[in-house]
Length: 263
Length: 159
Length: 106
Image (cartoon, rainbow over all chains, first blue to last red; front, top):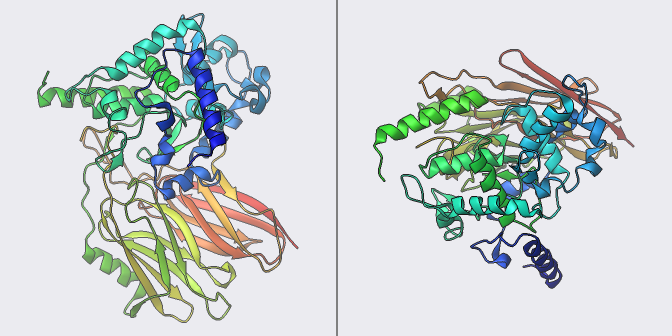
């Protein structure tokens, strides 16, 4: 079990998180929150623990290469503005989705990468779930590994967090299920042999064993919605970004694990 | 609000269509024709010929209840001094319910130092796995393990 | 673009048994899946993995559709002298990838 020191540290982080984002409520008591990692078998945990055995690292390595590649009409690489990602991207993924002033709404990390491509590299957007976009997202998010999830403190984000939370709570679809029914009320149980977990996205993009590939949080959410037999949303839909935003605020204070491995 | 089964199918194909536009292949994993214990026996005979396969010396580390049948970590190790005159030549792994009985052949030699390999395999269903080692003296040794595989929930597929 | 992740100790003592871990990016399409329209997705797998040390084969593996995507293979070898490991993956549709790693043996 956790040492007293760790509990105090967690409490401080959580208290700080609540001060910044009062709407980040969760149905699970703060001290009962557990990463999806803790629900996995030791064999699967071992895959995540070893960087030389974690298939997600293949994408992160690709991303490292893409970071330096000049693209677009502007002929610029990410590195040309952001230098060494190890320092410039530290902590960045931990506060995404973040508010974009020009769009007036939150954007997730993948959208931010595409916005950079459009605004600064004069390059066309990378398709959602394409290998290149996932590789860059994995590489950038990996630079936040170990950092505490800390949603952007901008008050403009609050109405979007609320929308995301409303989605999470709302019963929908053929099964008349809300996300909360499983992930708040039944996270200690199983569904079809798999642990339900608490819907705390600490390691995205993840290498999901079911996909045998790295994939984004939105891909996972679309899987959830398919499982619920509810109306699904396209990649990049505002509803999905709002849900991502709520989920990350739900996980505030927990450390980033990207690239995580999950069943 | 209950909808007809037809609209569920349309929604899945619609989902698949939009997924295709984004570059994710819309595949459905139908239950393929499975191997049988008989095809596994035949595959084993391909390797060992008419030789007797003894039990022992081989250890198969595989989770008894797998997290996901798509990626199952597996380690096979064989007790052997691994000297130039007494070593493991190869390790062969078989299953009884995947579409194919073979899972991997691994060729070692005296320079291996330790007769142990690890990899990740796919298991289509709960089944028996058999690992067979061929030693330098021509003998065969085996071990088997029973593995339980459950289906994942909440995937791209409407099951 | 990185296709492979190799883990070989940089240094070893003569006679030590060392573990080598390899991870290769590959979809390992089984050939048993179907599209929603009912067509078979053709097989596309790595069929063979070989490791040579200073030119001599020290390990080889036959892979099948039962090997999980992004094949992870680990094995052992005795460190005898300094030199270079060469890794080769061969598969369907002309797939051929190589990687290498050096070791200093004292």
